Image (cartoon, rainbow, N blue to C red; front, top):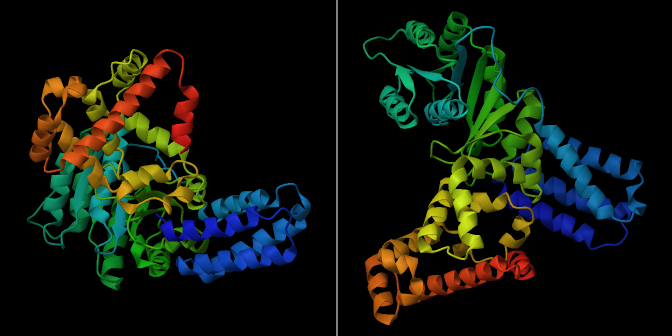
Length: 444
């Protein structure tokens, strides 16, 4: 997410940080690079121009050039102004006066609207609320089938009809069923088009008037760039959009739409999609995204993901085993599987402060999720006894494990050596020693 932009901004600020004192010429040169980086990331040119102008005005107006750490002050101001341009309105789902609260999902074909509907349903269910899905896309082939499958995956009830072309009636019946089921939310998935047309808008207006949604969420593919801003403006003018869901933020998109769209349209971003999995949806926090773009990490989101995916009792048991130095490969495998649930490794690591600065120096394969799969395969190819006592694994056992996991004896050796180092560190920690070594290892 914003990988290219983050790398360029880090380069600019690293250059400023290396200078003890800054001149107005230094600031102008740095802000020119920032502006170019934003434009290359597909940020709206007016937004980019206003952004750098505001930063320049604040830096020069507050007399920061003569401060003890002017480079850090520039980064602080940039972070604040970046947060400002992606903020606007409420980024949480609003509740209406009565249940079910209705969400109308709108957008163009291919933006991920149906998947986003199911993801939001899962998010609400995880939050302890009762969602209900309504399949009101009666045009796209297999749209109803897709939503039914996804509803089954996330464990949510759904209303669907196949022998009708009356979208308004389907939406109304679906909300009635949601009400009868005492659902807190009814999420209505509607048909998209390959382009905005009057027929699409007229139908959506009819559905909106009939069900009176609390939230009307426009789902946009972040890879469409500045065209997403135009689409948002047109939907907002005709339908009245209350929030945005930006999908495919994990891809190769330059991401400029996310930095421009609220500033240009005034519509707040509610969610961002970071993958195809049902749990790959994040509530939008402007300050957290700004921090990630500037390479400052996002520890709050990382903590939330950890709490969602790691069982508290398992964590307590793991802590006990670490203190007693009885942590074995079964425990390691269990933690590896929990880590995989948090999402792609590169995305998780991006949330660690300072990681983006190290990322460019690391081999690409180090952040490849296939590495985790390979380690998992190696451990699965061991016997229960070998997992409990990896020191018993000799040459013939290593060759057998390598054949069973489709890896090499060298891969098995590497894993065992790394695990041995980990056990050694845990033994030191269990006797009150090794804390400095552990911190040095983490820092490296």
